[in-house]
Structures are given as C-alpha cells and as structure tokens.
Amino acid sequence: MSSSTQSHEAVGDHGSENRLFGFWIYLMSDLIIFAVLFATFAVVSHNFAGGPGPKQLFEVPYLFVETMFLLVSSVTYGLAVVAMQSGKKNVVFARLVITFVLGLGFVVMEVLEFHHLILEGFGPDRSAFLSGFFTLVGTHGLHVSCGLLWMIVMMVQVLTKGLTSGVRSRLERLSLFWHFLDIVWVGVFTFVYLVGLV
Amino acid sequence: MTHEENRHPGPGHATVGKYMVGFVLAIVLTLISFGIAAAGIQPAYAAVVGLVLAAIVQMLVHLYYFLHLDFSREMRWNFISIVFTAIILLIFIAGTVWVIFSLNSRMM
Image 1 (cartoon, rainbow over the protein chains, first blue to last red):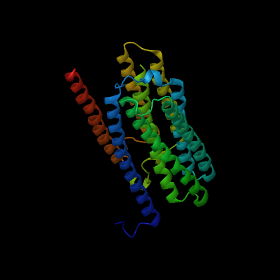
Image 2: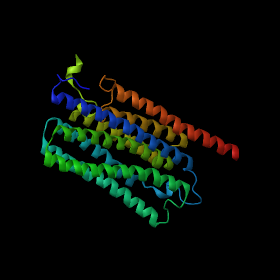
Image 3: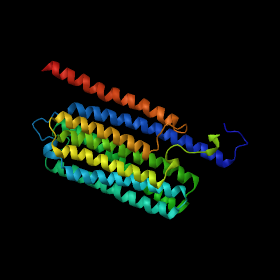
Image 4: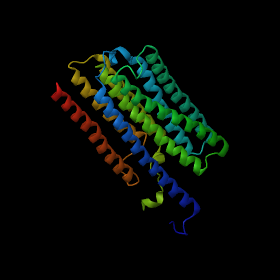
C-alpha cells in the first residue's frame, strides 16, 4: 500500500486521516438514523390522543439551560483539541474534565425531565406524540451518554499514555462525534421543543 | 505543494479564536431561536420560518467553526459526503411529511 520510502510517522498520519474520514462516514449514517426519527416525530407530533402537548409539557428556561450545557461543552472540547495540538497534556486533561462535567449536566437534566414526565403519567405510552418525543430525544441522549463513556476512556488514556499519535487520533474522532451531537441537538431543540411552543 | 503541509481534516486547523467566534455566533443564534419562541409572534407560521432559518444558520456555523468544514481540498470528500447526506435527509424528512400530510388531508 504505502511505499517503503515513507517514514513510519507519515504512514501513521495517513492511517489516522483515513480513520478520521471513515468516522465521518459513520457520522453521516448516524445522521440518517436521526433523519428517520425526525421524520417519524414530524408525522406523529400532533397526535396527542387527548393527552398533553408541548405547551403543557415543556419549559423554555429549563430547555435553555440544557442547551447551554451542551453548547459550552462543545466549545470546551474544541479548546481541548487546541491544547492537544500544542502538546499540553495537563491542559487537555483539565478541559476534557470540564467538557465531561458539562455533558453530564446535560444528560442529568434530560434524565430528570424524562423521570418527571413519566411520574406525571406522560410516558412514551401516553400518546404517539410522546412516543416520538421519547424515541428521538432519548436516542440523542443515548449518543451523548456514549460520548461521555468514550471521554472517560480518553481522560484515562491522556493520563496514562500521554498525547501519543494514537491518543491524538482518537481525541480527534471524539471531537467530530461531540460536535455532531451538538448539531443534532440544534435540530432537536428547534423542531421538537420550540416549534411545538409557537 | 500543499501536499507537504499535512493538514488533517477535522480539527486539524483549530485555533482558540475560531472556536470563540463560533461560540459567540452560536449563542446569538440560540438566543434568537428562544426569543422567537418566547415572543409569541403571530401568525405562527412566521415564527416557524424564523426558527427553521435560525436552526439552519446555526448548523452551518457549527459545521464551519467547530467541525472546520470548508471548501478546502483537505475537506473535499467530507464536504461531498455531507452534501450527499443532506440530500438524503431532505428526501427522507420532506418526503415523509409531504406523503403523510397529503394522505391525512385526503382521509379527512
């Protein structure tokens, strides 16, 4: 594949670039999952079965705080990547911790919202609207939770292995994943929450 | 020429300044979205159009400032693949909404 004249490092970089692009293609397929869930939600979004609609269920200030958690975490992850490029291991670790805490804040707020809705009797079994809501928002939350798990692994690797080319390459892929989830969240807070409120 | 620069796709050319500009733009667009929803603009479809536009612009801001997607050579295949995906998304979502709502109105 690669010619023998290339240095080991150059070959490694090329592999890392391929993995980054491969991961990008995975993210494209993930977008298709979300597209299907958004389409489903759009179809059932007015089928309340006599139950509550968005205006009775959603609170704008709560949603705003949740959105800010994820947006700020996206930026702090970006700052971790900047620190990674200048090889500052401890700064990368600190910024990953901040990103993790913010991401965890987002997931905790979402779980509390779900818990509250289900206790009130407005679980996914109440109406088609709520089924679509829990499926779409829950799938996004599950992705964020997986991202948090991945981030724990990366924090451990940054501490134990340092910023090796493998660790850098993984941090770059997690960066794509994390920023993409924030883009999907823009779609969620707009089309699921805010459009339902106007 | 540029081959030797060895720029990575993705977060390869990240700077603090770029993230900060993206952050400020994203905050402004988020505030616009929440503002539209809170203002109770009438007619409702005008508010929906505003929300959709704000969301599209915010997604583009995130793609450029956070995912570093641009027209550069390094990002060409990332760009082509996301344009392809966007077309698929449009067909899935707009197609579904069109077919189901048309069916719904015919059944009334």
